[in-house]
Length: 294
Image 1 (tube, one colour):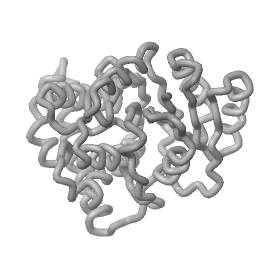
Image 2 (tube, one colour):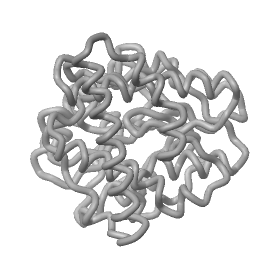
Image 3 (tube, helix red, strand yellow):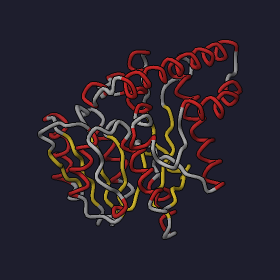
């Protein structure tokens, strides 16, 4: 049995398309659980639940953040394989089958999908999103071929339910925590490049920083930093991503945007070091809603 676990907050406009994409691909015996606290999104979920018995709402009255919401959902799921996604993204029309296929091997503990940016490359922030998703794709392809450790993308991944531990409620990158814990149990994480998911990325620098400090900050927390496995850090990013980013540019304007991206990533990792490692600011401070991705 397959369980889909979606977290959503104030995403009444996007949760419907997210559910439609899954319902078109899942067998009838599967289930889709949506954890959300707000009334507007809940109303849409209830409309779907009246038509599709697979769809269920998991209330989250305390609003303690995404890790706590995921823990609530994981207590309620019944499937052996759990597919994770968000209420503001949409999976591809044939994404589920390639995401699940690698689980035919018993030592595969998780499989990550491939995010695509639906932001316009003609803008600076849109261009940045295309550089970063392309870099992540090429890195995952190479590491998957070599059998190396992979990080799952929180936009779309699947894991064996029995391998997923409770997620610390202050974890900034829950997908990283799950990835590391599965690898530490001796299981492999695979990449399914045909399991695509469309993502809208931030359109302002302030929102870009809010999102990236939150996600990159998770790799500075002890849950991930002290793991024997590693795939993402400021040092690895500089070593592995610089040439790829420079080669991605197609024009002098895009080359200039690439140089600005290097400066922005330095700004980002400096903020991560200060806010997470030095100030140890909590999830409630660092997890700020990003409106331009909705």
